[in-house]
Image 1 (cartoon, rainbow, N blue to C red):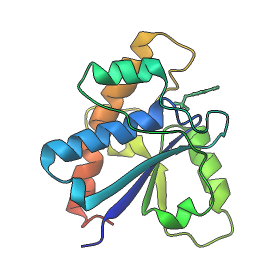
Image 2: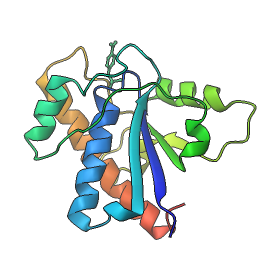
Image 3: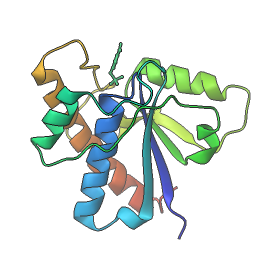
Image 4: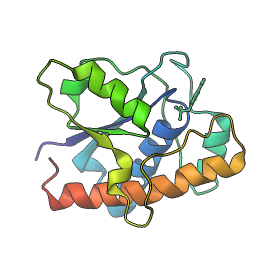
Length: 160
Ligand code: 4NP
């Protein structure tokens, strides 16, 4: 079977989307499903290109046994054909990715990652960059819920 390709997108690609990438990789490993998916992340901005995830985000993830392997990069139009699913963190990311694909037929389905939450009723994963440690824990709580639901939903629909 073709591997389903997932791209997580936030603003800087150093906090939320690298966390989503790490959380989903962690959950896939726990479920023995890594071979079924290709996972990456990107930012709508380019300021942090080449950087690892923010040290505060990496520390919060490490506290839950989760490694964040990402190096930041900016999303490019070709990603809209190179991925099957693009999962955005907030309304601004969603609008930016939709604008990138405007006027073109694209392969990727684009939607907020919070659509896959089971336990939380939220529209956005809040940007933790300018806040305290609790913001990073909140990001991981939301992503733990959203990523588990995402995997379940993709399995239920045959991955595409
Ligand atoms: P992210 O968080 O979009 O979750 O990676 C941010 C990282 C950096 C900035 C804003 C948000 N920044 O303004 O540099």
